Image (cartoon, rainbow, N blue to C red):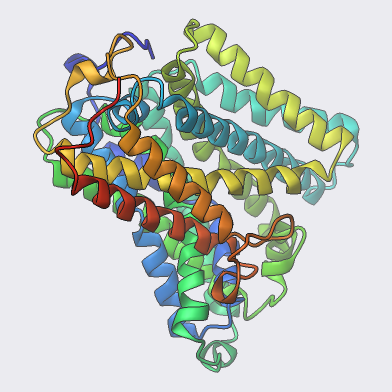
Amino acid sequence: MNDEIIKIPDNERVLSPGKLFYNWFAANIGIMGFVYGAIIVSYHLSFVQALLAALVGALTFAIPGLVSMIGQREGVTTFKLSRAAYGIRGNKIPNFMAWLNMAGWISVNVITGTLLFSSMLKSINIPQNTLTKILCLAIFAGLVIISGLFKEEILVRIQTWFSWIFGIFTVVLLVIFLMKSDWTAAFSMSTGNWVTSWLPAVAFVAAGSSISWSMAAADWGAYVKPQTRLTSNFWSTTLGAATPLFVTMAGGILLSTISPNLATAGDPYAVVFDALPHWFGFIYFLSAAGGLIPQCLVSLRSARINLATIGIDVSEKVSLLFHSLFIIAISIYVLFISANFLSNFELFLNFLGICLASWVAVFLVDSVIYRRHGYDVDLMRKTSRVHYNWRGIVSWIIATITGFLFTSNAAYRGLFAHGIFENNSSLSVFASAIVAMIVMLIFSMFKGEINDAK
């Protein structure tokens, strides 16, 4: 994670497409996919429409797939590559937002995992109190933090085992839901509007999954063996993430026929638990909590890489200590001081999603138009003479502002948040990405006049 090293040495690039597949599979096998499926149904879609929205939404992991391909081709991690599109200094703002997003979601997952561990103990009649909650936090956070000491190859082995273990648990859950589902209710769902209902459902899935994961894609792609075909990298990333996400969302769509209140429940995990046989309760909570760990492993690794890329030069041990304190401090505050903080914090992280959607759009368009023959390593060094690439910066600013103008949620309503954008902030993520691509394409028409500003 040394910021002075731009290209990953070939002897460290040891990941195969199969290992990459397991990495992304494990990170997306979580129980939250069932909740996503129920939320899709809440858009008032038919059973077929809901399944199609889940499928298309899951396949938007082609976006991280493309980023991962670029990372492998260049042997460079995500936000070092991003310096070419934004300039060595201009890249710091989206880089910081990416770090904040990753570190924030680790904290959210650690909090959720702690509560699930606590519920798991309750299911076997161990009393709930402050001491047991502290113990659960120590165990869950400890497992995540210890992972920061492992090298990439060991992490991938862990991800592979988690893929198998929690994949099997999830299949058992799915079988139970298939047996208990009200198929008559499923096929009697009325057809929703494809523009005002189906499209926002797809946008919701993409905003909550693939777009957020894009910033971590090249962090793994850069460690894939150089001789690996780029298409193998693409499909391993795309299908590795999309397959478990689609399967769990399909399960959530079926589960909504048993528990219609799942999408709006304050504690969706408890709703899922109530729909299961009592004997499966302990295994369910273990699977739900354990399924969050792979997500934390990927996020922690990318957060530490991003912190170094911003220019904060500290040792790996200091970086791990800093992230550990950050995660534990937020977890303690939410679990023991202010329970209302979590919903507001997640809302703040959703705002960051708009910034990251416009970032990845600028990044990909810049790569296609200007980096087809490879990246200039000098543009990614800290000594680069290109401090600000105004083409990328202006595109990102315009797109991000546009996204906020179309955002509508409980805390904020943008000026243009009407029609299909009303109470549907996920669509504003799509809007910001589309605007970023359009502005970048307009800049490309003036290639001879617009250059990287120094």
